[in-house]
Image 1 (cartoon, rainbow, N blue to C red):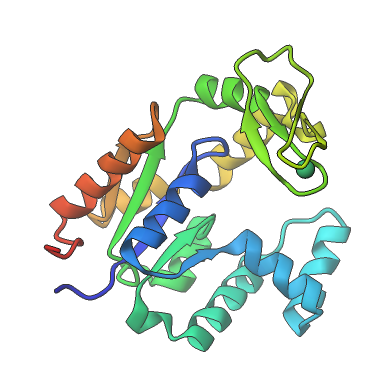
Image 2: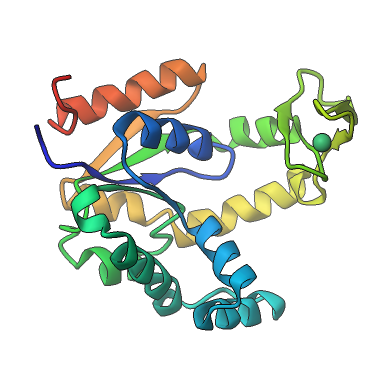
Amino acid sequence: MPNPPRIVVLGRQGAGKGTQCARLAAYLGVPHLSTGDLFRTAVRDGTPVGVQVAGYLERGELVPDELVVGIVQEHAAAEGLDDRGYLLDGFPRTIAQAELFLGSDGKGVDVAVELDVPVDVVVERIARRRVCPVDGWTTIVDDPSVAAVPCPDGHDAVQREDDTPEAVRRRLALYERETGPLGPWFAQRGLLERVDGVGDPDEVFDRILGALRARGLLSAA
Ligand SMILES: [Zn+2]
């Protein structure tokens, strides 16, 4: 049986990255490391890095690459991730972060899976997203003119303020600038697998497994 795989998942907002990462981590039995979650936990617990991160967020500034990498390294060491494999979700976000964490040869990871979903598709998908402000329950409505749907607990799930098409296009442009160059960076190191992320989540998941199998990263079982 191969060592537990170390995987980076790339994909623009709305590409279904969170959903696929959660499924993949459960399937492979490797820790799912979301930098968004790490940040929130560090800020909430008021750890030394958390205090620094909170400062940048309050000033509306980007968290510097060294600090982001520091948080992930600290967590990876504490959890012994070198031996357990991992799935990185939302990290690295820039080439600088990739080089700091994975090395300039990218050897810290076995594969980078890029979920490929066209901009127009994710803009349209996010426009139909409704989120419960109380518990975070999320759904995609069929009709974008529907303002609110009840969550299972009876609250109104509504469109988030930053889910308007204009705001989404701004976030996507930032992603393109910051993270877009990572695809070619991984490709040059022979580590990139592009997976078509359009369609039924079950089909997308099967495509991801197919790409991992082709690289010998799935055990026979
Ligand atoms: Zn609710």
